[in-house]
Image (tube, rainbow, N blue to C red; front, side, top):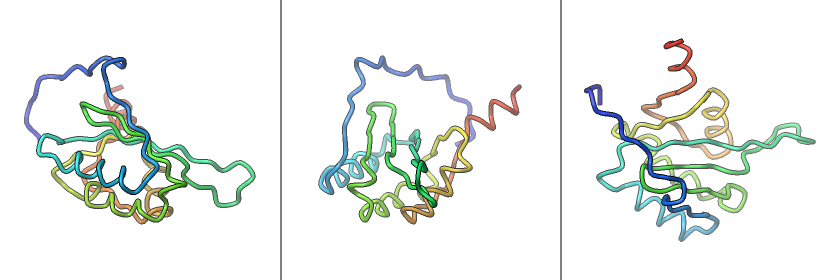
Amino acid sequence: MFEHQDAKPPSSFELTPFTWIERPSQLAALLDKLRGADVKEIAVDLEYHSLRSFAGFVCLMQISTREEDFIIDTLALREELEELNEIFTDPKVVKVFHGAESDVVWLQQDFNIYVVNMFDTYHASKLLG
């Protein structure tokens, strides 16, 4: 993991497939893709809603690989999302977040998902100035 690699430019937005995930069968297909041998990192972002809500809740989860983007309807799949622990706790897969303090808490609180091997771009940018 800590060896030099040349930067890999992202594919263009127009050429990157996008998948909306709202059914358990679609979540299972996503898990199959994330289990792939060539998935060494994923980017993750959460959208959290707290307006007129005491506790708040995660309403969308975004996961991207180098080849594809996924938007997960966390309201529709709330009970199934714990299955993502297989990927989120896999130390061989780097989970890339930006400003992850709240995201990590929300993943645990709302879905019982834990994160192992995380890289936070916010803290990296602060360290690099």
